[in-house]
Image (cartoon, rainbow, N blue to C red; front, top):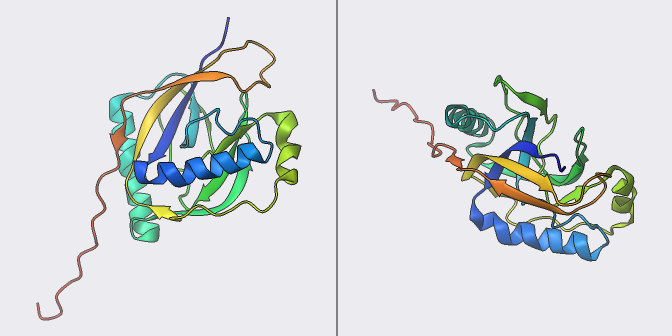
Length: 190
C-alpha cells in the first residue's frame, strides 16, 4: 500500500511557469532524475492532513504581509538550494526571500526552515548529483508578486524504497494571496 504525503504549497503566478520549466529542463538534461517529479511550487510544510480553507486564507494573508513588509510586495528569487524533508525527498530550486510563515495550524508535521521554488526533487542518495551540474542559470524574471497557497497530496506510484521519482499529485483549491497595495504616503500639506 502506498502512503500519501500532504504538503502546503506557495504557487507563483503562471507567468513564472515557463522560466521555472526551463530550469527544470536544464536540471533534467544535466542528470537530475527528479526534475519533473514535483510541481514548480514552494513547499511550506509537510502536514498530516490538508489545511482547512480558513487556515489557507489566513496563511495567504500572512504571506502577503511578509512580502509587503520586506520587499514592497515582491517575492524575490535567490540562488538555488537543497532543502531536505523528513520522510520524503529534498527540494531543490531557487530560494525565496520570504521568511517561513508561522504555521499554528493543527497537523503541521514539518514546517520548512527555508522556502525554495522546487524545480526538482532529490532523493537522499542522489544529492551528490547536484555537485556535477554545471553553472545553474538564474530564473528570469527573478521575482513575482501574484501567488496562491494550496494543499497538495502526493501518492508514490512505486512502494518502498522511497528513492524513486514516480508520483501522482493533486493540488486542492488554491487561495490567492491578497493583492499588493502600495503603502499610503501622508500628505505633508495635511
